[in-house]
Image (cartoon, rainbow, N blue to C red; front, side, top):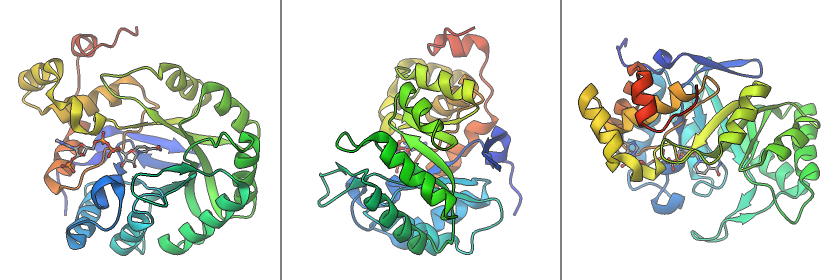
Amino acid sequence: MTTAVNAANAGAIVLGDLKVNRLGFGSMRLCGDGAWGLPKNCAAALKLLQRAVELGIHFIDTADSYGSEVAETLIAEALYPYPAGVVIATQSGYTRPTKKNWIPNGRPEHLRKAVEESLKRLRLSCIDLYQLQIPDLHVPFADSVGALADLRRAGKIRHVGLASVTVGQIEEANAIVPIVSVQKYFNVEDHSHDDVLATCERMGIAFIPWYPLASGQLLRSPRLVKIANERRATAAQVALAWLLTRSPAMLPAPGTGRIAHLEENIGAADLKLSAEAMHLLGEPRE
Ligand SMILES: NC(=O)c1ccc[n+]([C@@H]2O[C@H](COP(=O)([O-])OP(=O)(O)OC[C@H]3O[C@@H](n4cnc5c(N)ncnc54)[C@H](OP(=O)(O)O)[C@@H]3O)[C@@H](O)[C@H]2O)c1
């Protein structure tokens, strides 16, 4: 089916030797409340994933901790065998003994086991992008990254990414193994990790802003709503268009459990923001 709304309208971005449309999908919200357990309606979650791919989403972000294990299982169930060009990016670095507990675990033996388990759940022999979800303060960072470098050498991972890291950690990791992506909190109302974005731009690394919609909180922002009304767009579309315009290194992957919101968010790929709108939304960069 052809459709005018398509993630391809956001352009493309490279992740090592892979190229994906520059608007992805984050799967955390597909699980039950608090990213814990099964969704209320599994059939609807599967349909949403299929619709995302149908609308040109080629980058799907997930993690073994979403569910736990639920999001990866749903992705495989909905999309396997994966259409050509679809990149599943998963990550590990947390264990979740309960819904509320996210416990960092970057021990090499944990990461090795996590990769094997994700490979099984995703029904893959090699994961296109595997991300360290958080540095573990109790484990030397180089040991966690070194474990991923070994897994890459063993052919279990194609590319390595990072999340929740500093500029120094990106540089340290990149000296061990080529880093192709970094996830960090970033959205139109919070640019406090501008330094990480600038580093990604300089190093040719994709920047994946997590909580691109601040979990939906920022959609009531008067500045966003004003521009949305002027452009006959929605606040979510303006927030995502702002990210896409902010940097060519940006790869937003907003999450939703609703097909209507998915389609609305992909519509952001067609929204061009003027320099004046970018300025009004807090973009001072020349
Ligand atoms: N590496 C990390 O540590 C890390 C941490 C957090 C997130 N992430 C990744 O980043 C992805 C994005 O984060 P996220 O999904 O939590 O946050 P988000 O994209 O900022 O916001 C998702 C929330 O916004 C709502 N929403 C989405 N589209 C909407 C629309 N058009 N209108 C109104 N509300 C809308 C969703 O509710 P509905 O379901 O009702 O649409 C959901 O509650 C995650 O899925 C995950 O893959 C990574």
